[in-house]
Image (cartoon, rainbow, N blue to C red; front, side):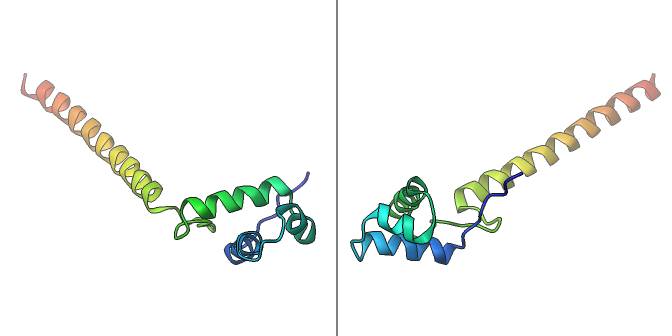
Length: 97
């Protein structure tokens, strides 16, 4: 089984700088760094799209995705609490009859 290589944020930023700031061809940088050319081009696009939040890595999420995850977790908790309250209300309704 082949494991995927993981590159640090710093490695990706430096690779992108070689292409964007120094003007080295993406194909040459990809060969020199032993990464696929399409991967390097994806890194360049990601860096251009959002330079501050590019390559979060190590389980860190972009702020928008972190907010969505937090809201999903909160939604699940609220649904669980609602279900418990429904069951409790049904139980006490039976008891009063």
